[in-house]
Every structure is written in C-alpha cells, then in structure tokens.
Length: 257
Ligand code: GLP
Image 1 (tube, rainbow, N blue to C red):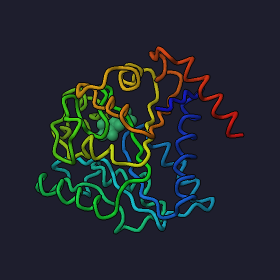
Image 2: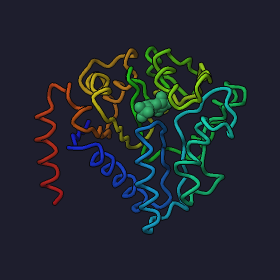
Image 3: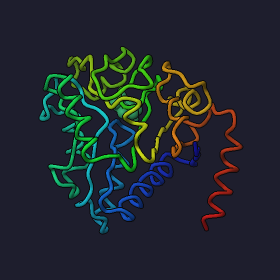
Image 4: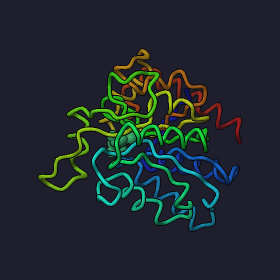
C-alpha cells in the first residue's frame, strides 16, 4: 500500500484528480471504476475542469461501485442521478459505456448482469474508492465476505444514518444496495482510495494498519498489489506509522522529479 498524507483535503483531492486524468491521458480507452459520496463531489469537479481544459473521456468505459435497491434511475438520490449530476452530464463518456447496477430491477438479476458487463468490458484499470465510517468500501458492510462478488447487501443503521443527509427530511433511505463485492473490487488493476477528515481516521487506521478482516471490509485492500491511499491530515491522524509514510512519499517524489 502506498499511503500519501496531504496537507489539506484540497491537495488530496487534486492528487486523485491528477491520477485519474493521467490514467485517461495514457490510455484513452481506460476502464474507470467510479465511486459516489460527498468525498467524491470535488473529485468530479476537478475532472470536469480537466475535461474543459482538453481531457477527453470519449473512449472511456465506467463502472460504478453500487446503487440503492428500490430507487429508479430518475430518483434524485439514486447513484444514477448522482453520477449524471456530478459527472456524466458534463463530460463525454458515451451513455452506453456507463455502467451502474440497476436499482429497480430484481437484485439478483441486476447483480448477475453487472458482473457479466464487467467480464465483457473489464478489468477495471483504475478503481476509485471512498471509505465508510465503519470501513466499508462500495456498500460492503462489516461482515461482507472477502471473496464476495456483486450482490445485494443490507445497509447498517450507521451507514443509513450517515447517508440520510442526502435524502429529503422524512424520506427513509433504502435499507439495501447492490454493490460490487470485495473480490470484484480486487480485480481492478489499480485502486485509489480517498478518505478525508478526522471522522474517517479510525476507519483509515483499521484499513491500513489493522488486521485483514471481514469486520473491516476495506482491510482486504492490503492484499492488493497496487493500492494508493490518499489522505488529508485529519484522516491520517490515527496512523501509527504516519512518519514512515511521509518519508516514503518524499523519497518517491524525489525519485520522480
Ligand atoms: C457511501 C458509498 C461509498 C462511499 C461512502 C462514503 O456509503 N456507497 O462508496 O465511500 O458513502 O461517503 P462520503 O464520502 O459521503 O463520506
């Protein structure tokens, strides 16, 4: 794992944007794995800016991690809508190469179709990940099999409460979602996880320095050969080896320049 601690959330976000942009520049037909959540909104703003400055996405294929069960694509809080609002409506990824699990289909069928599309167009070259407060990646909640594929997962109360802020007052957030599994995510060639703020520090420490356990699904990333964990100071505050990660980054950046 490469752990990069940036001074500010803006710098951490810019680093992720630069990494995605470089992937697309080097391989205009790249397959991107995309994520949702508040952390990703500025990432998409940065990518839209890069697009306006000339970065083309016309050859790109994208796969999103997850979608709420029971929300149709037009529902404002569906991840279909999120992606259109924050990214797809502003760039040129062709509509027939943007894949999200179907939220208003039979969940088992939707999951099978999504895995088949991944087989057909994958593997994902670069998978973007956020992190839940309980260590979830995608919607793989604690207890998710580390060998899991795309399927329906019941959301924990903590996750539903955390995501309730995106729903209208009084609206009950969905109780389950279809999510890429841990094994699905692990098939990506490279993975970039972005976590910002002190509220994520405990989960970050468990992902990076804790034991590999289904109790903290993100910890499975320790088995992946090409993972970068991009953090701000707040999210890094509980890491025991933080000074070591800083030194390693300094060495790597000196070598690169
Ligand atoms: C949701 C998404 C995750 C995301 C997480 C964190 O649960 N399914 O993919 O990582 O939210 O979201 P935020 O960035 O809003 O903290």
